Structure formats: structure tokens, C-alpha cells
Length: 132
Image (cartoon, rainbow, N blue to C red; front, top):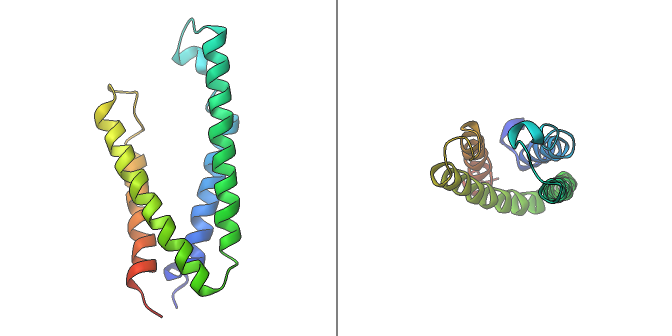
């Protein structure tokens, strides 16, 4: 089977992306908060820092789970890939909703729903369409 068209590859790629996203939230997201929000209060800054830590931690936990699931047998990998496909579909819808519902510049960047959409299609195709 083509290496890009198997559940193990989907799980590994998505796990690495989640790991990178976790690291981004840990080290980058709060770095320039004063430039984005001038005159931010200490309480609001503390709340943002704590939120960033929580987001980074959850992303790290999910990255570890996704990467660990890539070592399961094929049936387990397929189940995890189906779940991942549904999760990416929900993230795609949520990203588009926030792009439309938030003022310009406050929602997610435009590439985010595109990336989530492509991951949804890829993981959905491999888990729901391809049969062994």
C-alpha cells in the first residue's frame, strides 16, 4: 500500500503537527502580547498566559496519544484515523465559523481551515473509503 495512503502515516503526520502546534503555543503565542494588546492589565496578561499553557498542554497530550496510536495494529489505527477525521471536520467547521463570526484580524488565519480541510479529506479518505 502507498505509504501516504495508510492510517499509520496519517496518525504520524497529524501527531507531529499537533506536537508542533503545542510547541508554538508554549513558546511563541504569548511572546508579543504587549504589541497586540497595548496597556493590557496584569490580571488579563496572567489569564492569557494560563490559557496559552492550557492550550499547549492539551495539544501536547493529544499529540502523544495520536503518535502512540500509530503503533496499534491496523484495525486500531483505522479506528483512530476515523476519529481523527471527524475531529478535523469539526475543527474545520469551527475555524470557518470563527473566521466569519469574529471581526477582521481576530479570527484564525485563512490557511487554518484549508489545512484542517485537507487533513479531513486525507484522513477521511484513508479511514472511510480505502478498504484492505
